[in-house]
Length: 85
Image 1 (cartoon, rainbow, N blue to C red):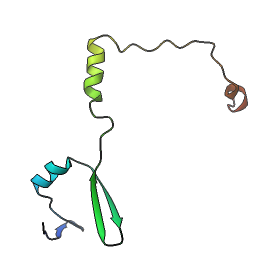
Image 2 (image 1 turned 135 degrees about the vertical axis):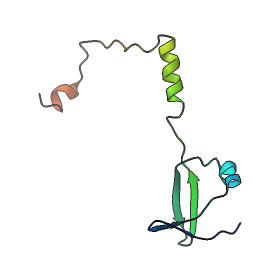
Image 3 (image 1 turned 90 degrees about the vertical axis):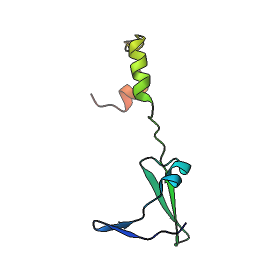
Image 4 (image 1 turned 45 degrees about the horizontal axis):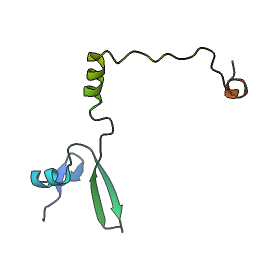
């Protein structure tokens, strides 16, 4: 597919047709990479935290969002060697 460069403020860009966005899974953020000095690769950026809002809501509804109990007397050599108290 051939397209042309357009002006976007002080920058320039291209319009990516909707079918190409749907085919590649590009929704919002992309990663750009220049290879061999004359090729630009555009990759969709995955959202590693996608779905967390639903998971947190489900945990709350199931009363599974209580803090973990931490043992009070846990210590490690780091405590004496690396921390300044």
